[in-house]
Amino acid sequence: MNQESGALMNQCSNSHLVLIPSYNPGTKVIETVLEARQFWCPVWVVVDGSDDGSSDLLVDLNKRDPGLRVISLPKNQGKGAAVLQGMKMALIEGFTHVLTMDSDGQHPAAMIPCFMQSSEQQPDAMILGNPIFDDSAPTLRVHGRRISNGWAQLETLWSGIGDSLFGFRVYPIAPIVRIMQNTRWMRRFDFDPEAVVRMSWEGVPAVNLLAPVKYLKTEDGGISHFNYWRDNALLTWMHTRLMLGFLIRLPRLLARRLNARRTIALND
Image (cartoon, rainbow, N blue to C red; front, side, top):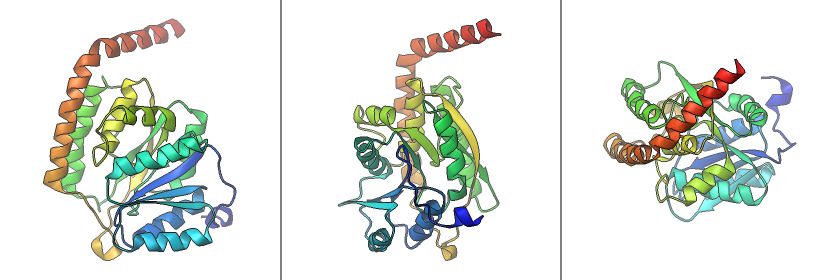
């Protein structure tokens, strides 16, 4: 890391911000925020009803860093609800894009500038992280996500979604807020995969960029709120809903695919 990137950024973007939903991450959230601030400004943290003391740590950090904003929700509502709250506030303040990342240190803060640059070059697209796993990744989680990714590919007619579950990504704010306000779902762990499917249905193209992911051990400050049975049941119900929505939209999706192929053929 060079001296320029190692210092906290003071010149803030007026279009793109980093948005971190946070629920009981322990002290790891401070490390995550400081790393994000090394590479971007502004950084917003939405505290989703945490009761582990991390909110107080963030508020104290906020007092010393004008490039950071802490938004506290009175009770836990779920990741998607926290992200939606942050995005609605960002939209009101004139921001056009958010990069979402987890508060537990799994996502690569050093990749933020690369993802933001890609978004600035392709503002109508969603920039999706395609995870590179190392030996720390639980085998069950790695293989299990292939099932969800397969369903997402089918539900979007293989429109180019590399990984439906990896939450390190950039969204254009206006379409994702509009989509979420028109459905009661996407408020908890189902947010990440359902968001990319519904965005794809709306014609938002996907750009995939590789990004390393690390799973921290408990002794290294790693905290996971993933519940195998509960969250997989949630994903099963989500894909059931999405398949029904896919069947309703199938004629339109097929027509879009055919038009895209015609356009490519005419340009060749």
